[in-house]
Image (cartoon, rainbow, N blue to C red; front, side):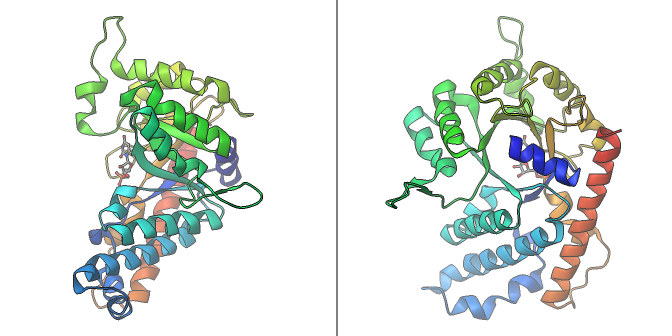
Length: 324
Ligand SMILES: O=c1ccn([C@@H]2O[C@H](COP(=O)(O)O)[C@@H](O)[C@H]2O)c(=O)[nH]1
């Protein structure tokens, strides 16, 4: 986590922009502008809509990355949005990660993997790449992620391969502990026989999984996902997990505020990274400046201007609440 913490410190901004494009979040004239270019590149007409959306997503993402790269430390592409388009979408996911990394951003792949040990080891190649037959022995890294999210439901053998791969590649993982969604309590708030809640037990496991990997800033490679929509539990988890860095989704579109997440930071104003996806990439829709008559370039300019303003507003709100 040292690289992430230093990136946050450099811009004095503990927030991450979620790159979760959907058809509804990309201005239609941007999608339309790729029709001719894509028509010539597909093998069959059925591939056209997904291929066209995929190139539009990349242009949209690049616009947002360029607009925020100097004010945020990280981006979090959500792989589901890209997988929805098939192989063309997955290509755009990796291209987005690579482009963001080239701009100096920490790239957190929200892939939420988890499986039995042998399969987890295959998923963990998101982090340590594919062994390449090159003389220096370095791995080919097709994903360009600095960290991935992981589901802990399968227990220790589903997590260990990710910790090993992260250690090997100097990368990180974030394990789901207390998720932001409305139904999360159905499982996570259940009482265990020893008096703990399920999510508290997972929290204790996460501290243990990271114990051998604590960096210079006192946090391990094994982070936790803690929803902004659970301020009380987030505050308690901060005390319970002193060596675990938090990824905090749920800000903005899901209702979480800067005040809600303040207790998830440590006494030095570190220890957490707050995500907003729709609140930033969809800010152009709420700007009141959009018109269907805009050209694709004008619409992308509005996307950039609105995303930057939303990211600045989030940064400033977090600075007031956290760095007091
Ligand atoms: O508990 C969780 C875990 C992950 N997420 C992901 O974060 C973003 C949130 O998007 P918004 O548009 O800012 O609501 C999305 O990719 C989720 O899959 C989460 O929300 N909660």
